[in-house]
Structure formats: structure tokens, C-alpha cells
Length: 171
Picture: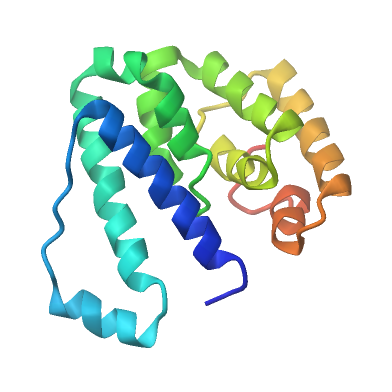
């Protein structure tokens, strides 16, 4: 497993656990020998798999209950800003777009890049592509904040996420 990956998975799982607890949902994941076999070859895979189940459980609940999504916007945003995967942030971003609109989500992601902890900054960059077409003013500010945060990033992984133009980024 790459350096720092375990800590990032722990942060992501903790954020999802907090969200699920706020929603009053318990997730039970049955043992799966295919997952165990993959985990034996890929450290962290069992946790990655478990996180996916938790994310989808939260997403399904929140997508069906917009009032719950609005009421729990903060914990959903926290879970989004702990998700360093390139594609999975789309699920929670969809919930936040429906609950608060694209300007609000883009402003939240901009704020995370401007003043968040390094993991939140990097995850905000990853989530930006799922925040719908950027408003012009926010897109410019996001790119500037991203460059500034990259200049100050001490962690090589965070720096790469902030500095890279990324083929999957609209920011």
C-alpha cells in the first residue's frame, strides 16, 4: 500500500461512520471470500470494499430523502472531503448538489482548498469535477486557490493532487 493510504482510508471510513451514525443507519457487511482473497494480495482492499458499501448505503438513503440530505449537509460534506478516490466522490457530490445547489457546493469546495487541512484540500480538488459545470467566478478562484495551496503543501501526495492539472478535473 502506498505511504499514507492507510491513514486516508481511516479518515474516509471515520467520516462515513459519522455520517451513517447521524442518519441512524447501521451497515452490516457479510464476509465475502472473494474480498478476503483480494485483501490477501492487496493490503487495504477489505477496508476499501467496506468503505464502498458504507458510501453507497449513505448515498441511497440521502438520494431518496432530500430533507435528510439538507439536514445532514455538513456530515455529507465531511465525508466527501475525506474521499480521495478519483471517481467515488460523484455519489456524495450528487447528494450535495441536490440538497444545496451547485454554487453552494462549489463555494464549499473552494473554502476547503483555501483553508482546509491537507487531506480536505486534496479531496476538494478531486470532488470539484463532480460539482457540475463551474461558475466562471468560482472556477477562477478555485484554480488560484489550488495553485496557492500547492505551493504550501508539504506532503508529496497532497502537492501532486493540488498541483496536477489532472485529466479528470474541470478546475
